[in-house]
Length: 559
Image 1 (tube, rainbow, N blue to C red):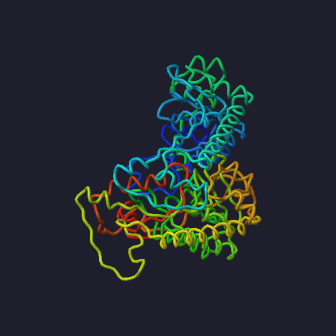
Image 2: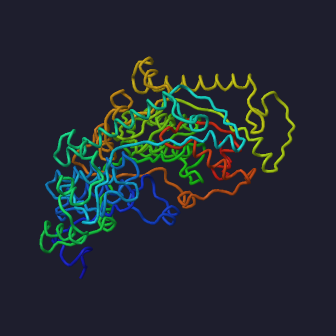
Image 3: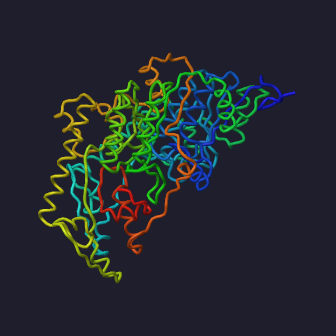
């Protein structure tokens, strides 16, 4: 006799248990990262499970641990939206947190919690949501002490990537840009609290100004519904679902759903192409800087989608602070070719779609973003580090022979000449102009209007929508809904999602051939400086000397 997966009777009610005690991941999962970080649910796993559970008559309720669900605003908002959509089915959802103050995730944890029917807090916890702030470190003084000069230029005044290296405080444009980001996120937080807790904007702001609030205070002010330990919250969820209900974990529930899906191969297919990490030429991989969005891999994904007659549309998930202009342009071309081949392309932007991240997206049929997605900038930066002084202090001397006036243009021991600096400026002007032109064409905007909102400035997804850079707000659920619409798939038809590109086991492990490293003594310094360039929310199209990039990337040798 065959035993059902979750008990002796398939009629027994289930309570779906979602563990968000660690931030969700986004993008394709690989065995190596799972070994390093342990198994964490992906954002799409959670969204898919809640979507299925809303339709599944066996699932009567959801209970989620929300101590640290997300690492950025857009992911938190997408989780919240998925919970709200689940609740629309009439089923209850309970959030439990030990505290909304630990591990620096208080605001994002509480943002997710506001989407639930009930918010439970451990009696010893607190609600430490105090507002929104952005703190930017500047390393110009450090570089001076190291005898390293950062020679970078940018287009235009809001392109703040180089400011981290060359300034000691905000420029006026830098402050204006960041202040608007903070203001937008703050208003979005207040709106979520207001909608979830039934208070107006001013009341929500007043509560944040009084925070952190102890558990009893938070209960009295209506920020939480109950003070309870986790086992008590679980018992409440089971009671709501029925006396004989049992908990089903997210991984087990998804496994059962995937087994069902394999029985329905004839469902209409939509391809999902992931573009995650720093954009570089080559394959997707892991480096010392984190994930790399390799243009070869992403282009291959679109090519596979074009060849597969079953694929009706492509959802392109972009999560990137930027990178190489050349690699970004290759991906942009793949997007436009897919559209020309009759495959609608819908971009879903995650936590950030920085400069190159927006370049790869701008040719799509539709662009979606979270309200808190850091969008843009439409701008470019270029330069190099001159490290002769540091090398000499480390006891490293250099000598060279060369042919060609500019053979040593990217040398790290000599600054740009005046003529070379003029060439850098001309190159930046060309790339920036091309960027603006392609945005205007792809978004069907007047070039003058694009120039006004470009200039290297970053926006939240909410502001980007107001300026025409984004079509609508939403995450995976909304992106697949738009893909259905564009490809003529009925809203109530179940989908088959094919993740592309199909990769080898070695690629999934993030393995790559070994390569020689130059100047190993500078690995730590250069890696830190490269991280500083791309830190914060001002990632972009940045070109650095090839040897420095190779060291910072772990020596893969690509440009």
